[in-house]
Each structure stands twice: as C-alpha cells, then as structure tokens.
Image 1 (cartoon, rainbow, N blue to C red):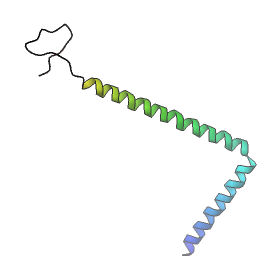
Image 2 (image 1 turned 60 degrees about the horizontal axis):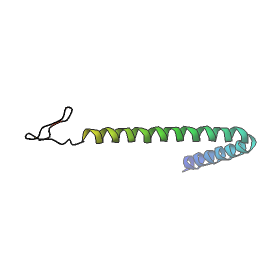
Image 3 (image 1 turned 120 degrees about the horizontal axis):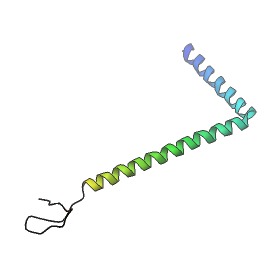
Length: 81
C-alpha cells in the first residue's frame, strides 16, 4: 500500500513539474507540439497513400477481360474461362 502511494505521489509531482516547465518554456513546448503534429500528419498521409496504392493494385489484378474461345480477339486481350 505504501509503495502505491509513493508511486502516485511521484507521478503527481512529475506532472506538476512538467506543467510549470510548460508555462516557463512555452515557446519550446509549442514548437515541439507543431513538430509532433507534422510527423503525425505526414505519416497519416503516407499511410492513406499506401492503402490507396494497394487497393488500386488489387483492383487491377481482379480486372475481367472480354473474350472467349469462339470470339475473335484483338491483340493484347485475354481469354477468361
């Protein structure tokens, strides 16, 4: 029980010290927040772009071509059975 109270007190003290530091060095904290925001935005855009690219490749792979055994085909078309 005493250990949990000590850990809780240390965490509360750390939170108060970080809050005071945030008020004291406000410019640095704002710059850090902006950097973190840009990292998140860039990575999210990369994620969406990669997912979109994978979806396009998947759709191209499943594309059905017209044709058949009895129909004459043009050059570059495929028969689908």
